[in-house]
Image (tube, rainbow, N blue to C red; front, side):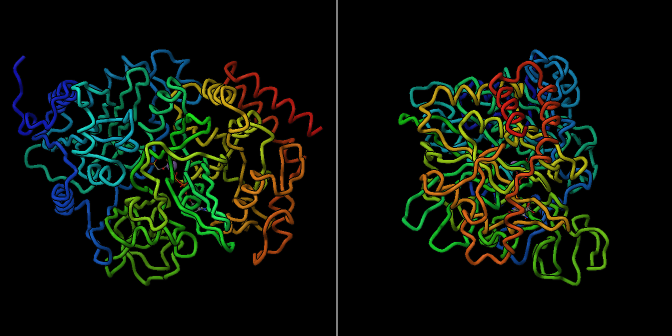
Length: 607
Ligand code: GTP
Ligand code: SPV
Ligand code: MN
């Protein structure tokens, strides 16, 4: 074979033979005009940003330093679950909740899509590390992409460039394994063809090969489809690695809550996409004396430490947060984080004075440029920002970042919260009787669909542990993994599990619970339960506080609303039973018997 001379291909700043071979193979298949090995330097970031401005992908914001507005192609605004595939050797290993195609077939299809797909473009090679660089076993990856927007975003979201690449070969010369993650927008340029600001392709594939731990993504530039360290690596491939190595890769925020007595409690919480993780992660408590710090807003990797406790690490380096609804009242710490600049805003609205705007902000501008790049006034019938518009901002800028956020050891978790978005049935908070009951709660939790994924919004679906779109293997095996980890642990050291719902509505459709900073009242009760200090009532579904068991001092909402938010209606719950049965039937005979036992107990308690 004759070696193809692609400028930059031979400039590899590493001797790692696996990296060199794979990058060459991809370059020869995709035939970019040039190859750039990303080092993560300031100079590189400035160059990438200015290229994105020249290309029309980025508009610099006058009102925020080193920050940019990007508007995607109107068709490329969210994760595409229908186009997401788990390509395990055997279909049964992907399980009934994932789309499956045999790896040979997927490789054949995508290889043809990738052939020549970077023509006329630059191929960027991004070495990255998920989790602290100081870990004993750093989780490494290389993302190859032909979209500079992905380079700019990966710089915020991951530890990337030279510092990550240094971890690929150990001091004694051993080459560490890495996850190859290939991304292309799927829009080659013919000679002289003018590029568009947001190249993408109507044909989209987000494919994962769990056995060989590879990611192949094609056709989309949107966050979860293109920033492959995030959901693709840290959750879909991550969950498979975690199963094999005996730990947990979860769609969870990590929060540090500090009591008036200065005692710190670490809490991990799994809510589906656009159901409140970022907001809880950056909580500003409304109750006197309580403080919160954050360690992560989307993903937690958790493993048992030598002391028998469950320790969590956030594999990410930035926040990719939902913009609409974020304001000084709801999430002041997110506002303080993005205000410092160095932030990429995608699909929000642009103000006439070069700032960003979205629905849920207090200000009411008279004129905006909408995310569709159209004139917008308060009379416009469509929202100015897309409901899934996002800010991408460095964690290091968050004023309440916990000092231990980069510690490879992680933080010991005292409580795990599961939660969804349910207008009815599910009470504000409900404590599991034990680990197995908690796993049942997580495995059967449900939520209304949001704009974070393409498809119909509002439909209730089961979303186990908020992992439905992110599981890299069979859901039944995943439940078994949770049960078995609990059995292998010292029960007295396991986190307590709670099921929360900030989104219950009254008959007039308004939220019964004020949410946001007021959620600190629920967290206080949870901490008091851990300390054995607070009361709860035994109900058929778990241990639920009465309104008087919560600290409601200073709360503006009528007590009747709080009581309604906490209500456990046996009739409503009886209606859940067939839905849970249907869900278990879908998963089939790999549902652990322990969870079937829990369902039977629930049925009996409901009478
Ligand atoms: P992903 O980044 O998609 O995983 O979402 P997330 O789970 O981090 O959700 P996020 O915190 O961004 O919240 C999504 C939406 O829910 C935003 O519009 C918030 O304003 C809203 N929200 C968050 N917390 C609450 C709450 O306690 N009550 C109510 N009513 N709305 C909330
Ligand atoms: C989510 O949808 O859960 C997100 C955004 O956090 S994405 O990166 O697209 O997955
Ligand atoms: Mn998420």
